[in-house]
Image 1: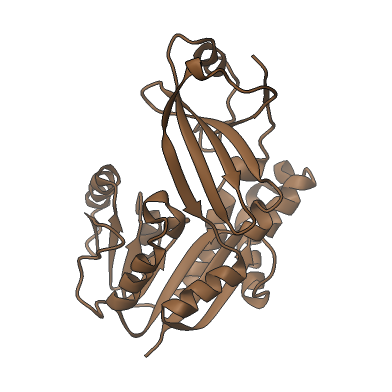
Image 2 (image 1 turned 30 degrees about the vertical axis):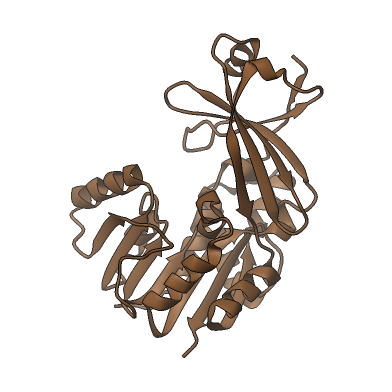
Length: 305
């Protein structure tokens, strides 16, 4: 088996610090007592975090499973001013001018189901916003994370015990093409990948297993499952995309530097309880360093009248 397991940098498997910074940015950006739509809400964490400062929030996601889970969680917490429904970002089931703020977080615009149709989702965001409504976007920073890594191969796993292998190719324009294969049960590859020491996040979840193919994996051990494409953004390309869609006063902030610097300096273990304070400090700095450096991008813009 000519596969080399690559070490996972802590910033690849622990998103909790990034989320803390993002939440601080959102608290400072989203006005109080307004109506908010979260496009691609997944587990609803952002709206749960904001629920005390907003009047009403709706989260939509294309995944029925995510919406069902999140609605159960909302009822369990007895939260009255939020709701979660299944919907497609390209066809939002709301009247024009329904929301004061629309959130598009966590690389939603880069998802494969929106590839080449990002403009449809953006036009829907513009439509459902009130005049002068605010949009907030979050995604990975192509300049920071990927430009020097044109190829990337890794394994993922599912809860039912299946393993999938991905060969990713990236271009300088931000286009990422992923070829996905299922690892066949009973093959030497399935035995090998099941025996590896997978990286585990601080939340106790196994993440991806990054590898290098020193020679190609035999095709008889894999079943081809398809190709997906994702469009990633640099600060400037993201800004241009939103301006073209109909937003003004568009600003892009980069964040996440404190985590990456602490990781590379080997200081993560000494940070401990200081994480929250560092997250707040970086959120303050991010607003002062528009178009700066960092692995994540945070965009804000106003609907053009």
